[in-house]
Every structure is written in structure tokens, then in C-alpha cells.
Image (cartoon, rainbow, N blue to C red; front, side, top):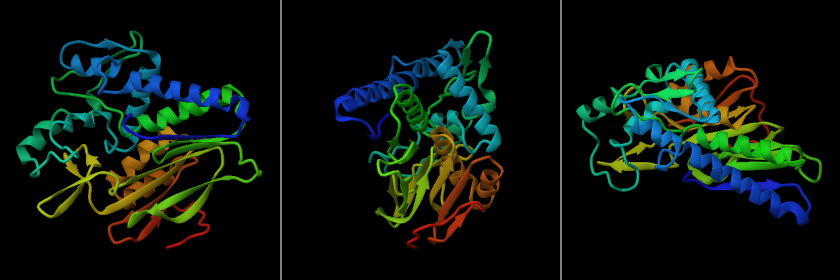
Length: 299
């Protein structure tokens, strides 16, 4: 998935390696299913058949797409797996020398729209009705993989642990000393440092930051977090951290809140059961949903 997974398990040394191998296998299985870069994946096949025909997919993938559409509805399109149509326009690997033209951006945006996705529950098919449409799970896939790996570990009898998918983290149980697992929120000005620690009790947390991946063009920094409605990188926010019951939700809503903005993002998160968020704006001011309980804060 183009990212680093760190897995911490509370177990005996005799079986720990078996569990870790099983976890790695589960992550690789999910990658083969949802990666749009793997030509053999069902996701890649959906993209290849855009404007041509529906593609029958595994129930697991169908359900993930269906849930993604529901999140798109809640966020009014701020989260949208069809954002992948922007891939040929913006690059964050050093290739870009200039901001894409308005005509290039508008052409890609025309192929974005979760409302256009056609799902057939009876046939278990997914169809992208327009040539140029693409789906990608860059804003939810890591969280989903973390959740699936946690589920597998629990089914194998692992009593406690943490799955950390490069900042999308889910936990269960407690540390060996009986205390809660703790997650640190990175300081956007210095991501190696933490400005606050929070307990994570059988829950998940994800952080999206403009410092993670970006390109500098004509002296201006452009984040990899894109607004699928405009085709432009988001500005005005440095990082968003979302706490949620599942890593899939935390992952998706961290991106969505980044795009929705401070007021709309906090208002939306505050209405969702078991969820909360912290936002650091461009001036390093901290905003948060009402149910956040600060502890060990270092601002």
C-alpha cells in the first residue's frame, strides 16, 4: 500500500512470529484486492472497464465501496474514492514543474463524483459509467487494512496489541503493565515531536497532515490532500486527527475534515457517535470537537 505497517502484539515469544506472519499475510491480501496500482487487482479491473461494463467483485470489496459512498454522502463529497481521476494531473514525486492548468484540473474533476458510481447489490458489480473515471482507496485503505488485521489477530487469540499503518492506528486490550495504549499527536511544525498524548481504548486514531507529502511550485507548497470538488490541494489546515471506533472511519474522516474545513469538519464529527477530532490550522491554532479530553498537553 506504499506505506509502513508497525505491529505490536502482547504474546509469548514462541507464537509471536506466527502471529506477525499472519498479520503480514492479511495486509498483503488486502493490498492485492484494493490496490489500483496492481494490474491484477479487482480495483484495477473496475478502473479498466470504466465506461465499458460493470465488474463483478468480491463481497469484501463491494462492501468497502458501498461504505465509502455512505461516507461521501455524510461529508457532502469531501471524501470521494473517485478522486483517483486526479492522478494524471497532480504528482508528488518530483516530476511536477508547474501547477496544472485550470483546463487540466477541470477535465479531471469532470470524472469525479461518487454519485455516478453504479453498484448492483444483487449481481455484486461495480460500474464506472464514464471513461476516465477511477477509484482509489488512498484515504481509507490503510485504515481498512488495520481493522482487518486487528480482527484477524483477535480471532487467533491475541489479547492485546496495536496496528499502526503509518499514522492510522487501531488498538485493543491493554499494555502488559495493565495501562492503556497511548497515541501521540505529532506537532506539524516538527512531526518527530509530540504535542499531546491520548489513551486509545479499543479504538482507532488517524492523522492527516500537509507535511506528509507535498510539492513546492513557484515558492508555494501544495499538499497531497486534494479537494475532489475543485481539483486543487487543500490549504489553511496543517493537520487533522480523528478518533473513531474503527481505523477505516478515522482514516476516511481525517481526510474529509481536512477538506471540509474547521467549522464544518468539527460540526460533522461532533454528530457522529464515538468520534472526535483535533485540527491544527495554518497559524498553529488548535481546534477540537467538544468531547476531546486533553492530557499531558505540550503546546
